[in-house]
Length: 407
Ligand code: PLP
Image (tube, rainbow, N blue to C red; front, side):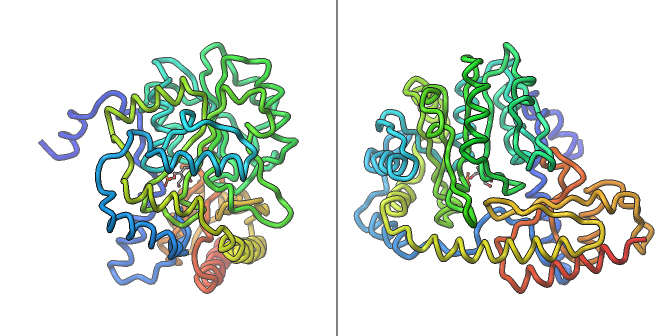
């Protein structure tokens, strides 16, 4: 039996409904071309190019020295939960008890634990598109149905109250909101969240998972706020998810956390107790140092990201056939290629989809980006600007050259 046939025979029904991550596939293809000696500029990364701050690394080294190398409480040690409680109070005005906090190996695990803990067959989860690639597949793995609702460019890539109202059914269990968003960088203002809260007040059976992973990466005059802060009356059915991965450049340490109602947190702990057990003890001490330590280094990083965002948006808007909105946050832009659909590349490739566009762009110019179809909204592509200015400038010049070459 071929290995792909063997894998098909082995695969569970739940896993058969899941696609492998498209963002990881692009990274793998770019890496393979690089290994062949091609000059590849990769704009696919979903992580800051900065290093973890030294004071965080030092806290981890000291934790090892003290022998903090054993199992901890399943969903996070008491010291870290106390730091998370302080973070939510200080930065979001949210009053959680330690018993309302869940810590897991990354924000991804937090979200997965919540979905596995609460979804039964046929339960629906509303996922605004474009979405972070993992939401619909995590919903399916957990046995639920993803109900994708378009939040297009005209709406600033944000879910509109009427669209939310129209998507809610008796089977709706969750709405997932992600602000600032991966892949668009769009972030909801206080008024926009309040408008969604008004709909949610009419549907008491709908819970909301807000993914605030990019909270600290917003630019200009935009002020981040989270749903539980805007609508404290809904707090009992909001799970506020966050983590240290993006804010503190700690993607490899694998620490995410959430605040929510105690009954939900108890169920999530039950999932973790039979799967991962505790997140890495050393990473927990590092995350504690990050949350309690000096936060001023973030201002510097924000300035750098904002400069790169502006550089990329301007350069892309100078490309024939591309239009790019200015996002409020994160480190992604999500330009439209509607003006290029139907054109032909010099090698005869017809650009009939965003996937054809990114494939031809990688093959002919060596620029790796991710097609919008992977995020549920075409024809767009995602660029991560979490890379050096020189790489971004060169990549945008190559994209422009590619667009000019299309006939
Ligand atoms: N949520 C969003 C929107 C993300 O983009 C990511 C990572 O790319 C995550 C959650 C997961 O973060 P973590 O690395 O902490 O699992």
